[in-house]
Length: 335
Image (tube, rainbow, N blue to C red; front, side):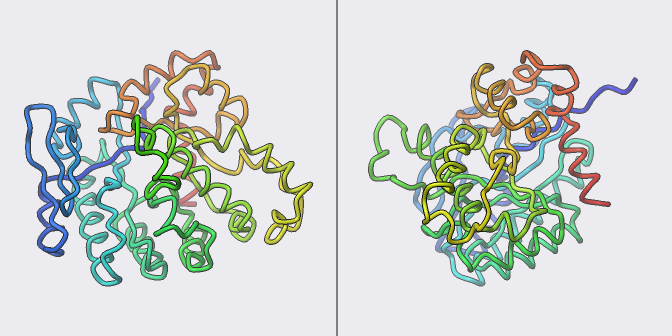
């Protein structure tokens, strides 16, 4: 019997070479990575400094070592949120996205048994983003894309994004919503609340916008993954369904009672609690959950494989979360 592969669907990468290429393409937005010690570096994106960026985020050998140590066979690579760089303008945003995608393709080609990839996109130019999504899937073998939960305060149901959603459904792409540019930032400056609360909050806003904006109805085959266990979505979706029944504002774009909203999305396992993850699985079903670590960041779960294997769920459900669900998605994508 073949040993099961484990597939981590939520990881980020930004190598020294990629940083240098971004800087060359956009000198006014220099990206540098400066080692602090063997385990951490300082990431500087156009003067915004992020200390303690883990070495595995930019060093492939360290990444592979960490994967082996934690029982992860495959990383699905995505860009770092710090380098989405949506505000560079139409031409430059597209160039920077292409640079990062071509670099990830190179890593996959060098380690085809260890890496897959999902693209970053110039989200502010949805038609160009749709073209880039088509390119990476048809030419580079990517599985989909990761993108921010909003664009400069515009929610993902904004009409500007229609070309991207249409292309994503047509391609059967894996569309991963990752929080960025969070709502309520002015009240989340203390205690690291921008991440502890702001990130899951903005993911939740994105999910609700996709539902009540009618995007998920217009594109019923759309496959949308929500980061960090979906934010608050699985636990508040029933409230949204009740809200549709009693509030006219919710019916503007959704003409029939939404049911099973929580099951309309896919979720990673990053919840930091056996009980919470088991509860989410109970709400949405194990078939809607995929392994995720958020490598290499400190708010991630490097022990995600061990975590899933220790859950009080069936072995079949564990297998599905660790590998089977993503493999099933890939099979459907190529069908």
